Figure 1: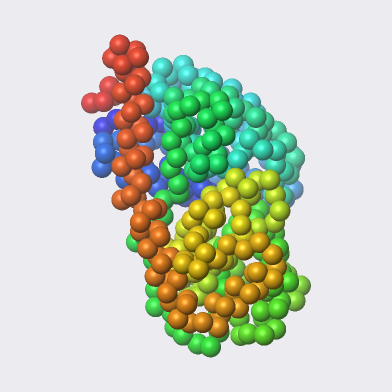
Figure 2: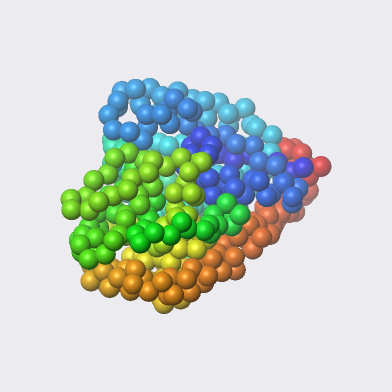
Length: 374
């Protein structure tokens, strides 16, 4: 088996993006002759406090400890055939650890699914966001043998620094995210899922939701972490867990992706869009990022811009059960045609094969690190 050393920022099975990128890919790469060894920057202690407000000094101490651990790991030269970096090898600081990764003398594959090259202050981590050195992504683009971008928007940006770019959208597990029979009552459920740091996005459609609940029997299902209240809107809040994530959305009728005006959102491929579609939910989403590429107006959902459009499209879906059923089938088919492991994983596996072959050719087929493909 060929080995991939994956430097990732978060502990496993927690961070949404990481879970559906390299963590999910690892399960399928074995069939192509690759095994993935994960080296998270975080440990459990840091993860427990990092995404919650306060405890600045404790966060700083834990970050320093994790940085030392990750630095030692790279200096000790883990055995691998390819070094993989998801977003960043350390949650703070310049690309020092990543640069040390060049000493492994193996090809580097860099995966970017968010525009982390933009300055962003997290509502959870606060001051530490200022230490993330967003422009280090430019260095990572340049030092990588191949860049994997989540969409064309980020891919085109990366090509300014390195022409070796492949686009791989988020992969959705269609066996996990699948439709389920709804126990029907006279209430239409509109579903939204997100994290602590994205819950403010839902408030962008507070006015249309108030109008809808004043006219229809509508329940707003929120699947996330932390507390959320919106004036004048009744929310059915469910705490996110890996065990209930899917079932909490399966008994919804419509999925929504509201977004606040933000430079960050203009670059994103929104994971929740694919998850809603896979479950068979018609999606109403703000026009931003990759939404217009994934959602086809009137086919599997609607892309909207104004509060009135939000209200009108949701009203149309609430009133028309046949349209919901029609869009549900199209939504599911969108994922089956484009975003499953069966569709995308041959491409992912070929990326690793190509960079390994190119590196061996460039180095005269002499490989001192890793398993040499055995």
